[in-house]
Image 1: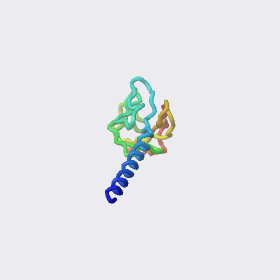
Image 2 (image 1 turned 180 degrees about the vertical axis):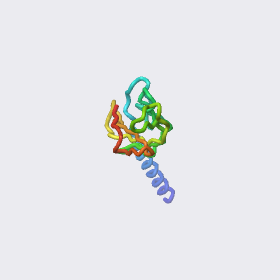
Image 3 (image 1 turned 90 degrees about the vertical axis):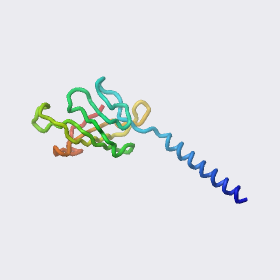
Image 4 (image 1 turned 180 degrees about the horizontal axis):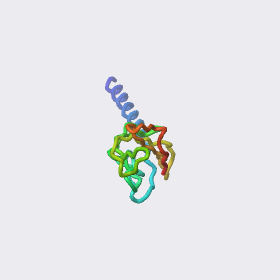
Length: 135
């Protein structure tokens, strides 16, 4: 009788794990919205290590480490090309950047962050004080 009870409890535990795993796997992980110019990078992917808009280096953030993903916001830190106020691009330099993806919606049938920003804390900018970008 004891063996039968143990087998039933073990079977129920396995069933709960299978159902929980199936439920967790049924929601696709969001991506950064796809598209962009042919030379762009990171779009249409999950947790891109590099986001490049194409063109000059101010449109690049690389070595991105994501601290959050899948919620209302995705937050990461990486290295971008900072150009200060009233500076020309040639006067810019690499600097730590914070990347914020937001506006979680659906793109081609899957969840995607459709808006993005990055800013340079050392340059005095904050999340609210940066230029808005969207794909």
